[in-house]
Length: 377
Image (cartoon, rainbow, N blue to C red):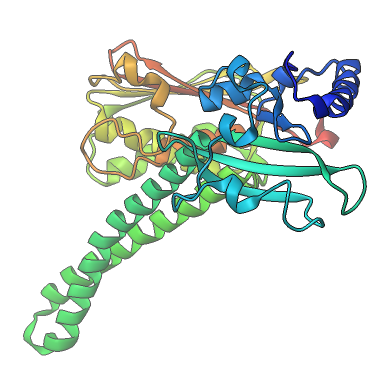
Protein backbone atom coordinates (compact mmCIF):
# COMPACT_ATOMS: atom_id res chain seq x y z
CA UNK A 1 0.00 0.00 0.00
CA UNK A 2 2.72 2.48 -1.10
CA UNK A 3 1.68 5.83 -2.57
CA UNK A 4 2.67 6.84 -6.07
CA UNK A 5 3.72 10.41 -5.26
CA UNK A 6 6.72 10.87 -2.96
CA UNK A 7 8.94 13.64 -1.73
CA UNK A 8 12.27 13.60 -3.66
CA UNK A 9 14.32 12.35 -0.72
CA UNK A 10 11.97 9.49 0.14
CA UNK A 11 13.08 6.98 -2.50
CA UNK A 12 15.54 5.14 -0.24
CA UNK A 13 12.86 4.83 2.42
CA UNK A 14 10.46 3.50 -0.21
CA UNK A 15 13.00 0.90 -1.30
CA UNK A 16 13.54 -0.16 2.34
CA UNK A 17 9.80 -0.50 2.83
CA UNK A 18 9.38 -2.42 -0.42
CA UNK A 19 12.11 -4.82 0.71
CA UNK A 20 10.43 -5.26 4.06
CA UNK A 21 7.05 -5.82 2.44
CA UNK A 22 8.69 -8.31 0.12
CA UNK A 23 9.78 -10.27 3.20
CA UNK A 24 6.19 -10.16 4.47
CA UNK A 25 4.94 -11.32 1.08
CA UNK A 26 7.28 -14.31 1.19
CA UNK A 27 5.61 -15.25 4.47
CA UNK A 28 2.18 -14.80 2.91
CA UNK A 29 1.47 -11.76 5.10
CA UNK A 30 0.08 -8.48 3.84
CA UNK A 31 -0.16 -5.35 6.05
CA UNK A 32 -3.90 -5.35 5.37
CA UNK A 33 -4.09 -8.76 7.05
CA UNK A 34 -2.75 -7.39 10.34
CA UNK A 35 -5.38 -7.03 13.10
CA UNK A 36 -3.95 -3.71 14.34
CA UNK A 37 -3.58 -0.46 12.48
CA UNK A 38 -0.15 0.01 10.87
CA UNK A 39 1.10 3.40 9.72
CA UNK A 40 4.65 3.92 8.43
CA UNK A 41 6.20 7.30 7.67
CA UNK A 42 9.45 7.80 5.76
CA UNK A 43 12.50 9.85 6.78
CA UNK A 44 10.71 13.03 5.71
CA UNK A 45 7.63 12.31 7.81
CA UNK A 46 5.35 11.37 4.93
CA UNK A 47 3.05 8.38 5.17
CA UNK A 48 4.09 5.50 2.93
CA UNK A 49 1.98 2.71 4.47
CA UNK A 50 -1.55 2.93 5.84
CA UNK A 51 -3.16 -0.48 6.19
CA UNK A 52 -6.84 -1.43 6.20
CA UNK A 53 -7.08 -1.63 10.01
CA UNK A 54 -5.66 1.90 10.31
CA UNK A 55 -8.26 3.14 7.81
CA UNK A 56 -11.03 1.44 9.80
CA UNK A 57 -9.87 2.75 13.18
CA UNK A 58 -9.29 6.34 12.03
CA UNK A 59 -12.14 6.48 9.45
CA UNK A 60 -9.59 7.96 7.01
CA UNK A 61 -9.30 6.26 3.59
CA UNK A 62 -5.81 4.98 2.86
CA UNK A 63 -5.71 6.97 -0.41
CA UNK A 64 -6.13 10.21 1.55
CA UNK A 65 -3.45 9.35 4.12
CA UNK A 66 -0.71 8.16 1.76
CA UNK A 67 1.78 10.87 0.88
CA UNK A 68 0.58 13.26 3.60
CA UNK A 69 2.67 14.29 6.54
CA UNK A 70 2.27 12.03 9.56
CA UNK A 71 0.82 14.74 11.81
CA UNK A 72 -1.78 15.54 9.14
CA UNK A 73 -2.76 11.94 8.43
CA UNK A 74 -2.88 11.18 12.17
CA UNK A 75 -3.76 14.41 14.02
CA UNK A 76 -3.47 12.86 17.46
CA UNK A 77 -3.90 14.68 20.78
CA UNK A 78 -3.27 13.54 24.30
CA UNK A 79 -6.02 13.50 26.92
CA UNK A 80 -5.15 17.08 27.88
CA UNK A 81 -5.68 18.37 24.34
CA UNK A 82 -2.01 18.76 23.39
CA UNK A 83 -0.84 17.76 19.90
CA UNK A 84 1.05 14.52 20.31
CA UNK A 85 3.49 14.82 17.41
CA UNK A 86 4.67 18.22 18.61
CA UNK A 87 5.25 16.77 22.08
CA UNK A 88 7.10 13.68 20.93
CA UNK A 89 8.97 15.21 17.95
CA UNK A 90 9.99 11.83 16.44
CA UNK A 91 12.44 13.29 13.91
CA UNK A 92 14.13 15.62 16.39
CA UNK A 93 14.85 15.43 20.08
CA UNK A 94 17.11 12.86 21.66
CA UNK A 95 18.84 10.60 19.15
CA UNK A 96 18.85 7.66 21.59
CA UNK A 97 15.07 7.25 21.53
CA UNK A 98 13.80 4.09 19.83
CA UNK A 99 10.10 4.00 20.67
CA UNK A 100 7.04 5.52 22.30
CA UNK A 101 5.21 3.18 24.71
CA UNK A 102 1.51 2.51 24.22
CA UNK A 103 -0.81 5.22 25.49
CA UNK A 104 -4.35 6.48 25.09
CA UNK A 105 -4.66 9.29 22.55
CA UNK A 106 -7.55 11.05 20.85
CA UNK A 107 -8.46 11.29 17.18
CA UNK A 108 -10.51 14.23 15.85
CA UNK A 109 -14.00 14.00 17.28
CA UNK A 110 -12.71 12.66 20.60
CA UNK A 111 -12.44 9.00 19.62
CA UNK A 112 -9.92 7.23 21.83
CA UNK A 113 -7.24 4.92 20.40
CA UNK A 114 -4.21 3.10 21.77
CA UNK A 115 -1.04 4.26 20.03
CA UNK A 116 2.55 3.07 20.18
CA UNK A 117 5.45 4.04 17.91
CA UNK A 118 8.83 2.71 16.92
CA UNK A 119 11.69 4.84 15.54
CA UNK A 120 13.74 2.91 12.97
CA UNK A 121 17.31 4.15 12.56
CA UNK A 122 20.01 2.90 10.20
CA UNK A 123 22.48 3.01 13.09
CA UNK A 124 22.28 3.78 16.82
CA UNK A 125 21.81 7.52 17.41
CA UNK A 126 21.53 8.00 13.64
CA UNK A 127 18.69 9.88 11.94
CA UNK A 128 15.20 8.39 11.94
CA UNK A 129 14.52 6.57 8.66
CA UNK A 130 11.04 5.33 9.47
CA UNK A 131 8.42 5.96 12.12
CA UNK A 132 6.26 2.86 12.57
CA UNK A 133 2.97 3.53 14.37
CA UNK A 134 0.63 0.88 15.74
CA UNK A 135 -3.04 1.73 16.34
CA UNK A 136 -5.50 -0.30 18.38
CA UNK A 137 -9.18 0.26 19.00
CA UNK A 138 -10.07 0.73 22.67
CA UNK A 139 -13.58 -0.74 22.41
CA UNK A 140 -12.58 -4.20 23.69
CA UNK A 141 -10.73 -2.65 26.62
CA UNK A 142 -13.69 -0.41 27.37
CA UNK A 143 -16.02 -3.41 27.40
CA UNK A 144 -13.70 -5.13 29.86
CA UNK A 145 -13.51 -2.03 32.04
CA UNK A 146 -17.30 -1.66 31.95
CA UNK A 147 -17.67 -5.31 32.92
CA UNK A 148 -15.30 -4.84 35.86
CA UNK A 149 -17.13 -1.67 36.91
CA UNK A 150 -20.46 -3.49 36.75
CA UNK A 151 -19.02 -6.34 38.82
CA UNK A 152 -17.78 -3.91 41.48
CA UNK A 153 -21.13 -2.09 41.55
CA UNK A 154 -23.04 -5.39 41.82
CA UNK A 155 -20.81 -6.66 44.61
CA UNK A 156 -21.10 -3.39 46.51
CA UNK A 157 -24.89 -3.47 46.19
CA UNK A 158 -25.18 -7.11 47.20
CA UNK A 159 -22.84 -6.70 50.19
CA UNK A 160 -24.49 -3.56 51.50
CA UNK A 161 -27.79 -5.17 52.49
CA UNK A 162 -26.50 -8.16 54.52
CA UNK A 163 -23.68 -6.18 56.10
CA UNK A 164 -26.11 -3.44 57.16
CA UNK A 165 -28.31 -6.12 58.71
CA UNK A 166 -25.38 -7.78 60.49
CA UNK A 167 -24.11 -4.46 61.81
CA UNK A 168 -27.58 -3.34 62.94
CA UNK A 169 -28.47 -6.53 64.80
CA UNK A 170 -25.06 -6.97 66.45
CA UNK A 171 -25.01 -3.32 67.57
CA UNK A 172 -28.52 -3.65 68.96
CA UNK A 173 -27.73 -6.86 70.81
CA UNK A 174 -24.54 -5.43 72.31
CA UNK A 175 -26.27 -2.26 73.46
CA UNK A 176 -29.53 -3.76 74.75
CA UNK A 177 -28.80 -7.44 75.41
CA UNK A 178 -30.73 -7.57 78.70
CA UNK A 179 -33.89 -6.07 77.19
CA UNK A 180 -34.56 -8.90 74.75
CA UNK A 181 -36.11 -12.29 75.39
CA UNK A 182 -34.27 -15.46 74.40
CA UNK A 183 -36.57 -15.92 71.41
CA UNK A 184 -35.86 -12.38 70.17
CA UNK A 185 -32.12 -12.92 70.58
CA UNK A 186 -32.33 -16.22 68.69
CA UNK A 187 -34.27 -14.58 65.83
CA UNK A 188 -31.71 -11.79 65.47
CA UNK A 189 -28.76 -14.20 65.63
CA UNK A 190 -30.38 -16.46 63.02
CA UNK A 191 -30.78 -13.43 60.76
CA UNK A 192 -27.12 -12.50 61.29
CA UNK A 193 -26.11 -16.09 60.49
CA UNK A 194 -28.18 -16.14 57.28
CA UNK A 195 -26.75 -12.81 56.14
CA UNK A 196 -23.21 -13.99 56.92
CA UNK A 197 -23.86 -17.05 54.75
CA UNK A 198 -25.07 -14.74 51.96
CA UNK A 199 -21.83 -12.74 52.13
CA UNK A 200 -19.81 -15.97 52.12
CA UNK A 201 -21.63 -17.20 49.00
CA UNK A 202 -21.02 -13.91 47.22
CA UNK A 203 -17.30 -14.01 48.03
CA UNK A 204 -17.17 -17.61 46.77
CA UNK A 205 -18.84 -16.48 43.51
CA UNK A 206 -16.26 -13.72 43.07
CA UNK A 207 -13.40 -16.16 43.58
CA UNK A 208 -14.95 -18.52 41.04
CA UNK A 209 -15.30 -15.71 38.49
CA UNK A 210 -11.68 -14.70 39.02
CA UNK A 211 -10.51 -18.28 38.45
CA UNK A 212 -12.75 -18.77 35.41
CA UNK A 213 -11.61 -15.52 33.79
CA UNK A 214 -7.94 -16.34 34.38
CA UNK A 215 -8.27 -20.00 33.33
CA UNK A 216 -7.21 -21.20 36.79
CA UNK A 217 -10.38 -23.04 37.84
CA UNK A 218 -9.10 -26.36 39.17
CA UNK A 219 -11.07 -29.57 38.77
CA UNK A 220 -10.37 -32.36 41.28
CA UNK A 221 -11.93 -35.44 39.70
CA UNK A 222 -13.49 -38.20 41.79
CA UNK A 223 -16.23 -40.75 41.10
CA UNK A 224 -19.57 -38.92 41.20
CA UNK A 225 -23.02 -40.48 41.56
CA UNK A 226 -24.93 -37.78 39.70
CA UNK A 227 -28.32 -39.33 40.50
CA UNK A 228 -27.64 -39.32 44.23
CA UNK A 229 -26.35 -35.73 44.01
CA UNK A 230 -29.60 -34.55 42.39
CA UNK A 231 -31.57 -36.53 44.97
CA UNK A 232 -29.84 -34.71 47.83
CA UNK A 233 -30.77 -31.32 46.38
CA UNK A 234 -34.40 -32.38 45.95
CA UNK A 235 -34.55 -33.62 49.58
CA UNK A 236 -33.14 -30.28 50.78
CA UNK A 237 -35.88 -28.37 48.92
CA UNK A 238 -38.57 -30.66 50.30
CA UNK A 239 -37.19 -30.22 53.83
CA UNK A 240 -37.31 -26.44 53.29
CA UNK A 241 -41.03 -26.58 52.47
CA UNK A 242 -41.30 -27.32 48.76
CA UNK A 243 -43.92 -30.00 47.92
CA UNK A 244 -42.30 -33.32 47.04
CA UNK A 245 -44.47 -33.73 43.95
CA UNK A 246 -43.01 -30.57 42.44
CA UNK A 247 -39.88 -32.53 41.48
CA UNK A 248 -39.68 -35.35 38.96
CA UNK A 249 -36.34 -37.17 38.71
CA UNK A 250 -35.88 -39.59 35.83
CA UNK A 251 -32.72 -41.69 35.45
CA UNK A 252 -31.91 -43.77 32.43
CA UNK A 253 -29.77 -46.80 33.17
CA UNK A 254 -27.07 -47.82 32.75
CA UNK A 255 -25.18 -44.57 33.23
CA UNK A 256 -21.44 -44.47 32.53
CA UNK A 257 -19.15 -43.98 35.50
CA UNK A 258 -18.59 -40.26 35.89
CA UNK A 259 -15.37 -38.72 37.20
CA UNK A 260 -15.78 -35.05 38.10
CA UNK A 261 -15.29 -32.54 40.90
CA UNK A 262 -18.19 -33.37 43.27
CA UNK A 263 -18.25 -29.94 44.93
CA UNK A 264 -18.36 -28.09 41.63
CA UNK A 265 -21.00 -30.42 40.16
CA UNK A 266 -23.07 -29.76 43.31
CA UNK A 267 -22.64 -26.05 42.60
CA UNK A 268 -23.91 -26.51 39.02
CA UNK A 269 -26.92 -28.53 40.18
CA UNK A 270 -27.68 -26.05 42.96
CA UNK A 271 -27.74 -23.11 40.54
CA UNK A 272 -29.87 -24.85 37.92
CA UNK A 273 -32.40 -26.20 40.42
CA UNK A 274 -32.58 -22.87 42.24
CA UNK A 275 -33.30 -21.13 38.92
CA UNK A 276 -36.08 -23.61 38.14
CA UNK A 277 -37.65 -23.32 41.61
CA UNK A 278 -37.31 -19.55 41.97
CA UNK A 279 -38.00 -18.36 38.43
CA UNK A 280 -40.01 -21.25 37.01
CA UNK A 281 -43.40 -22.73 37.79
CA UNK A 282 -45.06 -26.12 37.94
CA UNK A 283 -43.09 -29.37 37.96
CA UNK A 284 -39.31 -29.26 37.86
CA UNK A 285 -38.16 -32.22 35.77
CA UNK A 286 -34.62 -33.56 35.95
CA UNK A 287 -33.55 -36.10 33.34
CA UNK A 288 -30.22 -37.91 33.67
CA UNK A 289 -29.25 -39.91 30.59
CA UNK A 290 -26.18 -41.44 28.97
CA UNK A 291 -25.01 -39.54 25.91
CA UNK A 292 -22.14 -39.10 23.53
CA UNK A 293 -19.13 -37.46 25.14
CA UNK A 294 -18.50 -33.82 24.21
CA UNK A 295 -14.78 -34.49 24.47
CA UNK A 296 -12.94 -35.86 21.47
CA UNK A 297 -11.48 -39.30 22.01
CA UNK A 298 -14.20 -40.45 24.44
CA UNK A 299 -17.36 -42.30 23.52
CA UNK A 300 -19.44 -41.99 26.67
CA UNK A 301 -20.81 -39.04 28.56
CA UNK A 302 -23.65 -38.09 30.90
CA UNK A 303 -26.32 -35.48 30.25
CA UNK A 304 -28.42 -33.72 32.88
CA UNK A 305 -31.50 -31.75 31.80
CA UNK A 306 -33.38 -29.43 34.17
CA UNK A 307 -36.69 -28.06 32.92
CA UNK A 308 -39.70 -26.29 34.40
CA UNK A 309 -43.18 -25.22 33.33
CA UNK A 310 -42.83 -21.48 33.85
CA UNK A 311 -42.85 -18.67 31.28
CA UNK A 312 -39.43 -19.65 29.97
CA UNK A 313 -36.72 -17.41 28.56
CA UNK A 314 -37.51 -15.06 25.66
CA UNK A 315 -35.84 -16.05 22.40
CA UNK A 316 -33.99 -12.73 22.19
CA UNK A 317 -32.37 -13.42 25.58
CA UNK A 318 -31.19 -16.96 24.88
CA UNK A 319 -27.72 -15.86 23.73
CA UNK A 320 -27.19 -13.77 26.89
CA UNK A 321 -28.20 -16.31 29.52
CA UNK A 322 -24.63 -17.38 30.35
CA UNK A 323 -23.17 -13.87 30.43
CA UNK A 324 -22.43 -11.91 33.58
CA UNK A 325 -25.31 -10.10 35.30
CA UNK A 326 -28.05 -11.66 33.20
CA UNK A 327 -31.23 -11.94 35.24
CA UNK A 328 -34.29 -13.79 34.04
CA UNK A 329 -36.59 -11.87 36.38
CA UNK A 330 -36.57 -9.24 39.09
CA UNK A 331 -36.57 -11.80 41.89
CA UNK A 332 -33.12 -10.99 43.22
CA UNK A 333 -29.79 -12.68 42.64
CA UNK A 334 -26.49 -11.30 41.39
CA UNK A 335 -26.85 -12.56 37.82
CA UNK A 336 -23.52 -14.39 38.18
CA UNK A 337 -24.75 -17.94 38.80
CA UNK A 338 -25.20 -19.13 35.22
CA UNK A 339 -21.91 -17.53 34.16
CA UNK A 340 -20.19 -19.61 36.85
CA UNK A 341 -22.15 -22.73 35.85
CA UNK A 342 -20.93 -22.43 32.27
CA UNK A 343 -17.34 -21.93 33.47
CA UNK A 344 -17.49 -25.03 35.68
CA UNK A 345 -19.01 -27.22 32.95
CA UNK A 346 -16.42 -26.08 30.41
CA UNK A 347 -13.62 -26.66 32.94
CA UNK A 348 -14.80 -30.31 32.90
CA UNK A 349 -14.57 -30.25 29.05
CA UNK A 350 -18.36 -30.36 28.96
CA UNK A 351 -21.03 -28.32 27.19
CA UNK A 352 -24.17 -26.54 28.36
CA UNK A 353 -27.15 -25.24 26.40
CA UNK A 354 -30.44 -23.51 27.12
CA UNK A 355 -33.74 -23.93 25.33
CA UNK A 356 -37.47 -24.29 25.85
CA UNK A 357 -38.85 -27.25 27.78
CA UNK A 358 -41.82 -29.30 26.61
CA UNK A 359 -43.93 -27.70 29.33
CA UNK A 360 -43.09 -24.26 27.98
CA UNK A 361 -40.53 -23.24 30.59
CA UNK A 362 -36.76 -22.96 30.51
CA UNK A 363 -34.64 -26.05 29.94
CA UNK A 364 -30.94 -26.27 30.75
CA UNK A 365 -28.93 -29.27 29.56
CA UNK A 366 -25.30 -29.93 30.39
CA UNK A 367 -23.23 -32.85 29.19
CA UNK A 368 -20.04 -34.07 30.84
CA UNK A 369 -17.47 -36.53 29.50
CA UNK A 370 -16.74 -39.61 31.60
CA UNK A 371 -13.43 -37.97 32.57
CA UNK A 372 -11.95 -41.19 33.96
CA UNK A 373 -8.20 -41.18 34.72
CA UNK A 374 -6.00 -42.75 32.04
CA UNK A 375 -5.12 -45.77 34.21
CA UNK A 376 -8.82 -46.75 34.32
CA UNK A 377 -9.38 -46.50 30.56
